[in-house]
Image (cartoon, rainbow over all chains, first blue to last red; front, side, top):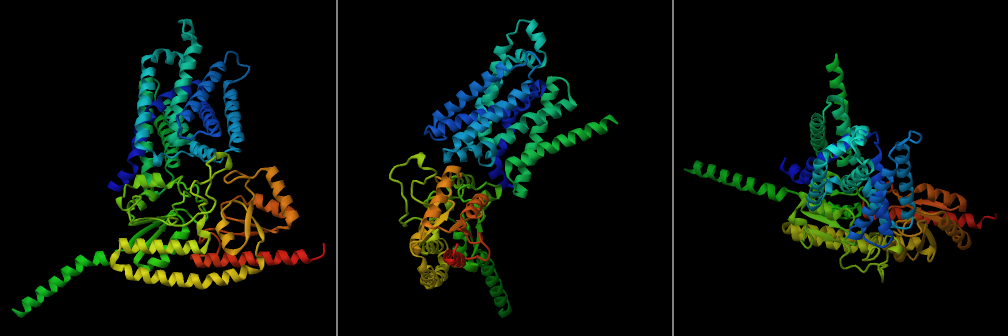
Length: 272
Length: 315
């Protein structure tokens, strides 16, 4: 057991500390019905990484982070502009287009850069098992900062996602808050993607939020349910990964999927 | 009195036996990154060691996906054997960090770098990413030369002898036996490929300069435009033109490379596709290193021979 703990300690810490914010952001994302926005922003950030690598920077240089951050910023601006005003073009379609074009553009850039290929693969699959202590701590500090901003302006953000009409009537400048939301969201997603990969970040955002919606209606309760689901699934997934020697990220994703299945079954029997 | 003494003696012997047994029978725990080192370690360590190889022989050694067992294996290892020429640089260092095992830290006798002391080929004069996925220390696929394997065997045996000194005589003896077999085989292999001196062969990735050098072949044209970059239509067209003008009729392909590309090129140029692998177990019937080179030399010689025969047929 001590050996298991020694090996899985940092992945476990990462999976206990970091999804807290992701679950909260997931509640917003699910409510707004922009499920694939995280994939799109992660892909845009990856495009920035590819660009930096093509310009000759190393994957770990600060310039690479700057490029990735700049692209995330642009992606956030783009998504702000696409907030549905009319219903002619659904926002989900535009999000999908951002994702596909960013992915194709990375592919074009990568055809000229062998190192980028490895880097992109890492972006998609992630290496939660080999996460470095410094990385976990840095990301945790960043997440705490983002969480604090959300805590301070929780009312504005809440109105933004859950009743934009009421917000508007109260004089809330929706696009400003939208932009801030997407920037913070983009930073959170891309920094976690570097560790856990796109699949894991998607699952942490969406699955606990969906489970929460099954059981609860108030924000507090939803958050509690989401956090419990994320924590239990993380522990089960990491334990299964260790005992059965499975790829860690994929094991957690499947554990989260299983959690949703269980949640729906409990709900069904509860109703009867 | 006498019986008491006897009982005492029995107890003493038993106690000594019990204390010594775990030490003298515990096998040396050996981890290797790739199957070539694994096979040679088995030849040298025999029953005295237990070997576990991290990368599957059919897996691209540049990219290996980490699993929890890799870290626990490294945590329990007495000896870690790696190439040490940056082939494993993308995935091994974080695993070693995670294992926190002082025995296999770099610089310790339990951490064997097989390339150390070898003169690597294709050491870049300037490091420039535009040249593709290059390695600063030179081409890391050195084990395809039997003489590099000779060097690796010596390094591995030396490490085993240092870490497990009480069995050093056995390791040395097995090392000699391996080197003897290798030295016997080398002239045979050279003779088999003798008729094909200077012949060009196509490869997918630049993994074979050491093999080509040793046996007088030229494996210098690749389906990848640059190492690590997937084939592009323009580059493949160029390769096919060269194949036709220079009459190159053999393409070698490894298990993890894109076989479809190689098949398409082979179909368009009438070339033969030959299954190759740098790793024992990567092609059928090759459990040991010597069996592997044996198979490679045999199949390549046969393919070159048939391509010669078909060339002589009137078109």
